[in-house]
Amino acid sequence: KCKTMLSKKYLTTAVYLTLCFQLFAQDSTKKGNLTLTGSADVYYRHNFNNASDSGHTNNLTSFTNSSKSFELGMASVKADYTIGKTEAVVDLGFGRRAEEFSYNEKGGLTAIKQAYISWAASDKLKFTMGKWGTHVGYELLDAYLNRNYSMDYIFSYGPFFHTGLKADITLSKNAALMIGVANPTDNVTASFSKKSLLGQLHLNTTDAKLNLYLNYVGGKDIPGNSTNQYDAVLTAVLNSTLNVGFNGTVKSVKAVGATNAESWWGSAVYLNIDASSNFGFTIRAERFDDTHGVAGLNNQIFDGTLSANIKIDNLTIIPEFRIDTGKTPMFYSQSDLLNPTAKAAPSFILAAVYHF
Image (cartoon, rainbow, N blue to C red; front, side, top):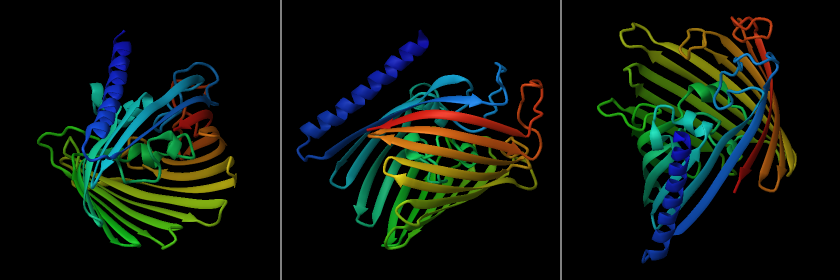
């Protein structure tokens, strides 16, 4: 009953915010532009190691912690209103993805994926204040923005979002800079906490077929640990049917009272092939090294993912096969459900993603 009441509360909030945007657009003496978009995703995941009900899903990344179950991912609605040099965005999400994305928050705050206000001081400088998805990494929260449905380890153990103030600066036609200050990573509220520094340098060729993003986030988390993450994303369009992506990152953490910092690192390559406008597939290969247990995995992991993208108008159907392997046993098998004795965990996902 409580969950039903909360769901109704969230839905009412979404409708109310949408109406507010519409009324503002209609009543303002200076007309602006309102854009409403939304998405929904659902999936079924099968873990091949455990055919029987065991409670172990062998999933160590975000959003797909299930097995032999039809699951709702997330339903989203986003309102974007621009007028003159100002912009306001409210992006709401309901479901497991939204809850895990805002895992530090409670109540209605878990439904607010993004909420920010921007002002373009000039054609080369824009300020933004509020909550927004992180600039770090290749993969994104919304399922329709990724070609693989399951998430990689780099996304899952890196930052999800930031709440603060940032400035986007256009340096030239081929270079842009973002600098900002924010609450500790993944925290909407952080009274008296020290803040994090954000940065991004974006370089691109004139035809925009080659893009390089150099990203940084560093500061102290809520317990007071000192953290620094350096991240690089490279995308290249090779031709009309083939493009590639690369993400490399390293995160160091110096715990309170510790003498030295420990770190994890990861790298992932994405090969995107589109045979036609209605069919394509993506191969993702990732190496994630958490030998020192900074992310809590204490292992060296390699995962490979093959995802097809079948497009029917606004619908994308994603059949996906994935296998995760560890240097030492870290997954459960049907033959031994008490301890992780398997080094590999194959799985299959069938997902449906809709965007409008």
